[in-house]
Image 1 (cartoon, one colour):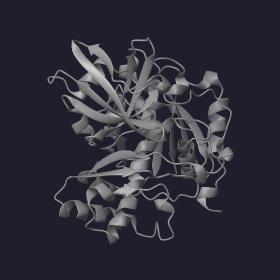
Image 2 (cartoon, one colour):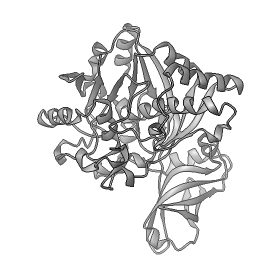
Image 3 (cartoon, rainbow, N blue to C red):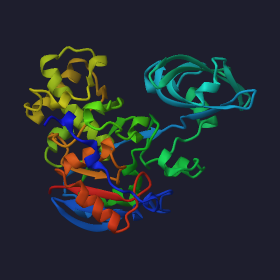
Length: 402
């Protein structure tokens, strides 16, 4: 049976509302930690996670930063229009778009769209006139042009001033002031995500110090998490699901570390997993396309399952990336990935995963099932029975075969 024929209903479970964490703990690293090691389950608190990670291992973090991407405009009639900025369109580069000083276009979701007939929407923000204009549609999204009349302010400034943090819809509450801090990892740097890489929310300076004492190396990459991360799989089989595409970037020095630390690579969060495993796909692709333009470095949904996929040694695939970057005199690989990791996938780079507990019938749960070789239900049954807190602000887990 091909991976496309997997029945999504097999990855469903009953998640009681009371086990969804509505808010984080006051101290991040006091969250509970479930440790799954090749079928054996134990418990601790997250502050002690270094006890379960071997010396000289490599932890890879996603350093993306969540932006206040939800904007509310009110029409003269009183109707509220919500614009949820998903990704930059013109300019398409995240950093460039957020640095614009008068105008930019973002692909967005629009709430109450039927009430927006096409007129420009306006609001006053700290003495600045802020305008939204709906352009053309593409599926569920629209291109929206934003303009403001204060060249001293960037689009990032406008979002920080009047945008709301897009906390997950399953929390069933509005964002609060505290979320601006608690819904960011302590190492968040690069603005662009509309959802946090939540496995990293448990890390504190005390945890990093304990990792350092065990000579565990740390590397960062950037994957800007899209709203599709919250989207459950609604089709009966995987064939009917379209995976969302996300931007990611990895430094040349990180690729070198992945080669040096082969067999000891721990990914912090499913976003890091998708980025790292996408690197292998790109390395394979570069073997036959060494002179490809950077904008063509996109991993498609089913690319990892092609007839000839997965045959190349990992270090060869990664060295193809290093050669490509060397040829282009670049220190960073930038690409997009739509990779779907599901049971049947053969992990190439990642040897351990630090993650939270995910929604039923989600692509995140499918990824976890793939890594633990179908034993996800043992883990989730244990977590449910022992009162673990689920989803973004919930408890953590470490999955490994060490």
